[in-house]
Image (cartoon, rainbow, N blue to C red; front, side, top):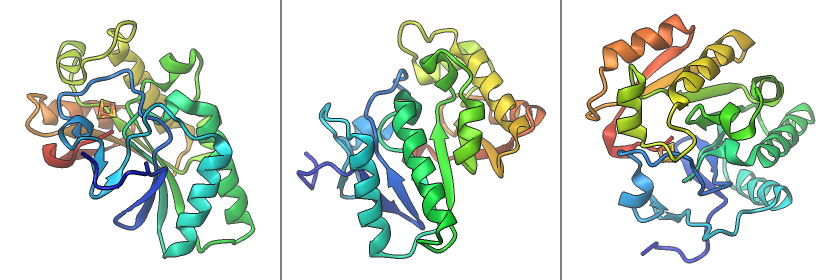
Length: 217
Ligand code: SF4
């Protein structure tokens, strides 16, 4: 049972304000904490119960949260895959860019944490649109080949062949001129982290080995 009844759209973690815009995701990763932690993240109830916020509601919740305390980044990363709601993601990030231009808040970066399936989800190459409004992209690569990827991320029907799409997305992001592109792998999953790091670096991305204990996108 979550500690709070009202689901959070914007919540704090470290120096960041995080955005929970959907609970939907085409994967069911073996390491995903949303089930293990019963949709709660450090006292924040992230269970939207199917009531996904509108773009206006996301921006309003974000503005309210940003006013409360200093922050260094805004991160699209809730208990779901943000690119499932590409329009809301882009609108919110564009609004943030506008606030940046007006110096409404001190300088900050905008980060997207994604499973890398956004092109398949949206049936188009979403990298150019992301590039206009996102500064940093973190892609969950998680595996050194498709067989291991399927075992770890357990993709839904229609996404079983998604590993190559994730690698293509990662490479396209690395070449697109974002401030940073980082590929991650979660430890203790059976993936060959050294091999995943090699693939990430060959794609032109940085590499980050994540702890199994706090893994989500
Ligand atoms: S870890 Fe991320 S990609 Fe995996 S199931 Fe959870 S939300 Fe989806």
